Each structure stands twice: as structure tokens, then as C-alpha cells.
Image 1 (cartoon, helix red, strand yellow):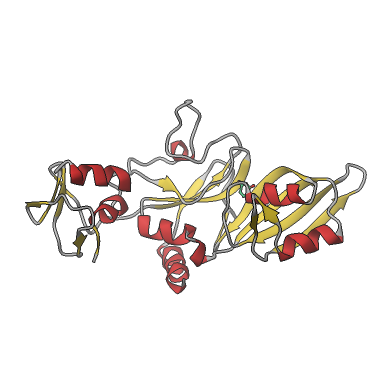
Image 2 (tube, protein in one colour):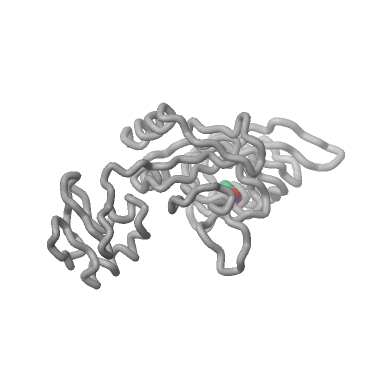
Length: 240
Ligand code: URA
């Protein structure tokens, strides 16, 4: 049994907040009866109708792996008219990004209309690995690396232990390339972590998200996930 507004949102009809408004406005029926109560729980066999449209409970979800290019915002729409990651995917389904990459960050981004999987993957308890490759202005010292690995305070919060490896150093240009694997997903986390040791990220790419990499997918291109990949991602969130 799941809450009605969550089921409506998970089926991709609208956002959870919008679903709550529709329920309160008497636009939702369950098995033909109007429902106004936000906490109402429904099972798989209940027939839900929203604004006169019967929701298909055997909905086919869509899952896309996008190699996000620079200069695109991670959002469903933008009030300033900038291109969004959703604009790059050719579908009429109401998909949305799972988590966020900055405007100038490239790499693996999952998009779907499967709210259960999306929420599971971004929930801190899932702890899925995210691997980033950062080009850094300044050269990380051994001490910087140690601090980053053991957790560093950003925005008054100490980051969790993570993997950090300096892949290469360019002394002439005073730059280095760093691999960072985090299990959290705070806003601008990698950039802020590097800033906290007095250096600056000048380029950032997410090389891996859980089991997904951009191998074979050019920047700006995307592919559908395989059923096996979806099953593996589900097994990761169900482990908690
Ligand atoms: N960390 C950042 O700083 N930016 C991103 O886009 C992703 C992780």
C-alpha cells in the first residue's frame, strides 16, 4: 500500500505537490469514489482516475542514460529559457533527472519517470557511488588528500569518508587531475570540497553513477538502460 499522491507522481502524471492539489480539489477518484484525504493509501489493484483519466498501473517506465554536455541545466524546465537535460531526450513522457549536475559539469546523468527508483537512488541511505574526475587549479598536497578522504566541513557539514586519488600533476600549469568517489550528493559537493582545501575545480565530469558510465555515449547523446541495468539499480536501493 502506498500513499495516493506518491503513486500518482510515480506514474509520471504530475509532481507529488500537484497531485496533492488535485486530490484536495476533488479531481481524483479511487475505484470510482472521490478521495480528498492526502494520506489515503492505495494498492496495486485500485483503479485511480485523475481529472477523468484512468492511470495505467502497468505503466512502462522509461530510463535514459545521458552524457550531459556543458551549458545545459539539470532541470525539467527553465524560466530563463535555457536548454535543459530533458530537452536533449526525444520522448513525450514526463521524465526528470535523478539528482543534479551543475550547468558546467559533464557526464553520467540518469533520467526516468520511475519515481520509486529515482527517489531510492538519491536518498542518502542508498549510498550509491558517484565517481568524478576534476581538473583542479592548484596542486593537492598529501595533507589535502587526507583531509578530503576523511571528511571535510562544507556549509557547516562534515562530508562522509570518500575515495580521493590524484591521477596526474602538471607542475608548469599548476594543475592536477583528481578522481573523487562520493556516496552523497550535496549541492556542488565536489567543488566545495576542493575549495575547502584552498584549490579550485576548473572542469568536472561525472564518470560513473552507481553502475552506469558514459562509455560509448558521446557528450549530448543518450541511450536507454537495459532491463538488467534497471534490475541492478533496484537491487542497490533495496539493499538500503
Ligand atoms: N559536485 C559538484 O560540485 N558539481 C556537480 O555537478 C556534481 C558534484
